[in-house]
Image 1: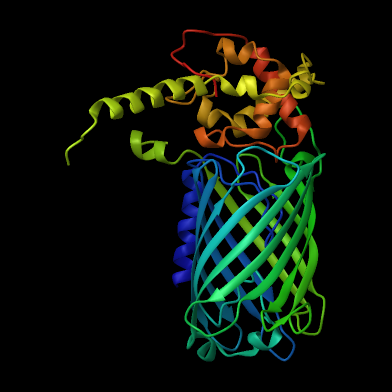
Image 2: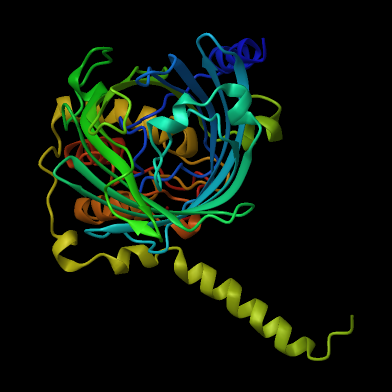
Length: 288
Length: 136
């Protein structure tokens, strides 16, 4: 019921707006693109999969991303999940901030990322993989998972380059649980993408190549301070496609394939996002 | 709270105002020579201008107005400063933005698309005295 209400609000926001989003196809990786000042992006993401010897799950996340400054973007997330033969539950929230320390564009552009997470162990949003995250976490029942809530601080160093239409991004992740005596956990995400056409066509068109971007992502855990490395964690890779509908939302799709026995076989991801431009003007003038 | 050195405070405020005024056009001087000399491969091409109009409508019009004459504090792009700037200077500015003053970087837009926007902007021509005061 709560999920339906969230979806309803999301649909209403589409009807109420008349602007478009311009999005790359990444689901996990961040590039150095920040939200334009005073723009609000609303996004709805899902991650679906069936772990071996586990139940089919759908993790859902609602994202609200706002450009506070040209160099500062803040984002709030609400997450929930549904597991077959189990239940549908709310799993927690995240609040992230991204900063560009260098104000000019360079060959490699760093972005500093800080996030506070308050999530229970039943979370299935797959917005990152850190530490020894693996398939055993996904076999917990929702009752077991929601009984423990982890409050953690997550930091990322985002490095990103644009060249000849390509974007190449590398993210290095460090996460520390604040209410549990776990060591620092680490992870990574790499992404590459490119629009299918670099120059725009002179007419309005829905299925022009310029409205599509294709790429690939690779992400996974790197263990923790007590056991750093690629083993005993999970890794995923897959192609990603984004379709920027002119004057409409952006729809992205990506199948992520598990690369080791500790990963889910395939996670199917879908993202629907929409950008509302210059929203403070709506309130000042009482109109869009 | 008592201000002990009002002259110093007023002086600092004056400096801040003067400095912010000086910053308005400073981006023009920051453009490296090599970037300034770049030429627009789409300059004057009708197809590129209409593509640029579409891109402008999607990405720029909400802040700078559909007529590019500026909105509120958002500057006109038909001011003499912008219209007389070299294409290479505008291209550099689109790539870097002015993050401190609210102009985002558009480096994620492919280069040809950015040149198309500049071709469109230059096709609009100057329209001074529009109330739009400063360059982006």
